[in-house]
Every structure is written in C-alpha cells, then in structure tokens.
Length: 85
Image 1 (cartoon, rainbow, N blue to C red):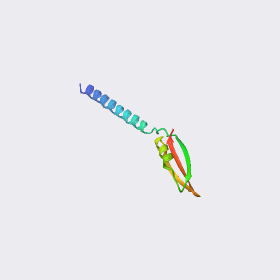
Image 2: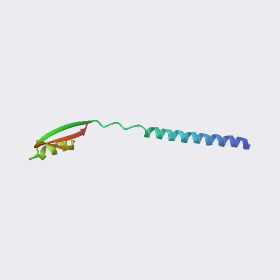
Image 3: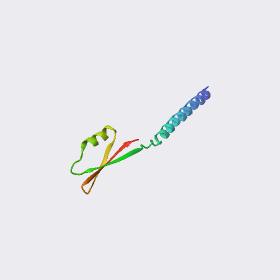
Image 4: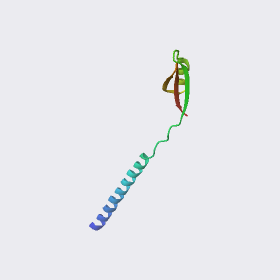
C-alpha cells in the first residue's frame, strides 16, 4: 500500500516539476524575442538663422514630425525631423 502511494506521489511531484520547468522555459523564450524595429522617415528644413518661422515647424509637429536636431551653417539653420512610418 505504501509503495503505491510513494509511486503515486513521485509521479505527481515529477509531473509538477516538469510543468513548472516548461512554464519557465516558455516565459524565458518569449522575453528573448527582440521587438520589431521602428522604421523612420526623415525631413530637413533650411531656414535663415535670423528669422526662424514657427508656423511650418508647428505644422510639422501636428503631422507627427519630431525635431531631432538643429545644425547651424553660415547664416542658415538646418532642422532635422523624424517620424515613424
């Protein structure tokens, strides 16, 4: 009688360990999958450094463009924008 109970509990414990190991492996595998890379499109606007017009910049912002950097160049500035495709 005790031998059957030992066998029964041994099977239950081994099955539990196997299921727990499977769940851990599956969760780890899902975390290792890299997210899809965001694809970007870019736009450059050149303006006079003396008078930077805000209306075109605000319009680009409404369209989802984000100002990334501003590069001065001999009296002008180049504004670099990006947005997801």
